[in-house]
Length: 327
Ligand code: GLV
Image (cartoon, rainbow, N blue to C red):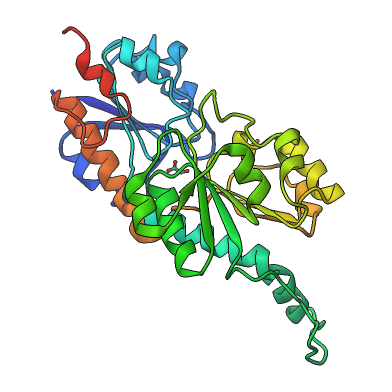
């Protein structure tokens, strides 16, 4: 009998074709976050679980899935998954690093340019007939060349942003748990303390994972240390930034503006005050959203899942400690 795998939500047609031959699939609903209780009748039998970043996988869920061997998350971030609980239970957790690096770095530069040069407002003015005659002081933005970008988290994505930033003529500073000598040699990035990053960045770009250490990292105190002319770009996870503090910072001019591809909560409700601020640009978590990248993520998620079902090491495992456990 083929193993049973739960897809928490329907995948686009053809994206998990490689899976269909090998396993029996059960699919959850499209429009609810988390693992739907409708799937509960299948929990006892499931050996594999393919999750999206909107699905919480915690002890309470795992306790209902005694045969589960692998959780494969369609994302590089795994903050939605209790990794320790999975490791304790011998469940490997797969994720999708690498394949989305360039797409996320591209969007980072897109948002940075958009806020620095006021592209959304200028485009809206043109569309609304507010162009008028060209004038030398119309729609003046901020120069990227010669400015300083502070990258919080110099992992693969942070490094891809550093390469692009250097090509734009930005000075690159970063914070990271460990020094990254190769990245420093390649792109001239310089590791500095967090307080220096806050104080010196014209653009502060967040690329760290969401952990106990980074939750609320950009709070009122941090925002107050930034330059009043600085922009914040969040490409990491919403809760790395204190949303209420950021709203206040933007309303009161503690910083010049923000571009957020991730928010807390997600989705940010339509009535949220951040949408009404002209100095805040919000996109709906689209960092990796290119056809090519999302297909690669799906391929990798399938490869992780199949390896886990076979008891083989996952191509990309987020809890390698699971392999160190006594059998
Ligand atoms: C997206 O946010 C991801 O973690 O892949």
